[in-house]
Length: 251
Ligand SMILES: NC(=O)c1ccc[n+]([C@@H]2O[C@H](COP(=O)([O-])OP(=O)(O)OC[C@H]3O[C@@H](n4cnc5c(N)ncnc54)[C@H](OP(=O)(O)O)[C@@H]3O)[C@@H](O)[C@H]2O)c1
Image (cartoon, rainbow, N blue to C red; front, side, top):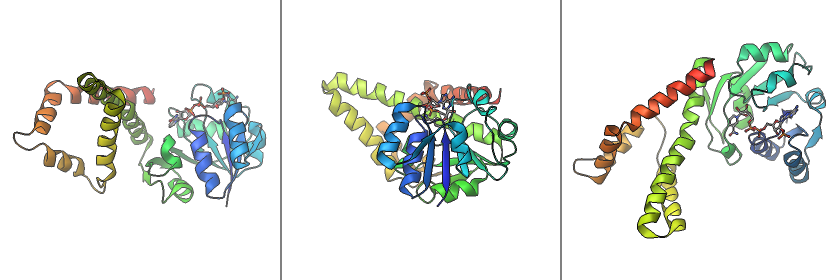
């Protein structure tokens, strides 16, 4: 079992702490956010300390700060050469991490989502992906990427989740207007998509198109939907958004 520290105990740190604590690791977290760190201490008996104490008492350190505040916080801290660093921070490059966390030199950047705690969260990873695999597989599969440009592209695809949820909310609201039952409309819309995806294997390239084409055959309502979305430039809007988000991460 490893000694694992978290710098920044916010929305994304908490589910990772819960997952890793359940695996038996020793966890130390920073005090802020006070409510979250107090809950983790009460539920899991994690240690709560200052950022420097967390670093000094652990071997693997997760950096879970907001990118805009991270440099100011990290440059005041002292890391060890043998320490392994996992950064979940968008827009802080490995080069920046190397200078902020020197003399530590073992880094992996990744993109977790809250459901990592339950498993099934794919972890795009640039750097020491074997470290992530040791910590999170088999429940959460690690997807190794070749460079930081590819990692940024994966960050952009993560932003599709709220985009697609927004589309689903529009569909659910439309259904509510037709039926007058908002709870049932939201349940139906959500369960329809989650049930479909839960049974769809994601084992190889081409599966998404195959599943789409199996539904959207000649004369079907499904084909009417895919064609209407394409004609309405939904795909063009998605591609433009992905490109812009990626560019924003590169600057
Ligand atoms: N949320 C996600 O789903 C998600 C997914 C993938 C990656 N990320 C990345 O994860 C990082 C954190 O995101 P988040 O959503 O977890 O943000 P968050 O909830 O705001 O967490 C940031 C944490 O840092 C703490 N903090 C602020 N100043 C600090 C200091 N001086 N020393 C120690 N801790 C300090 C904050 O405490 P206070 O609340 O007390 O200010 C807060 O608990 C970001 O870089 C983001 O890009 C997030």
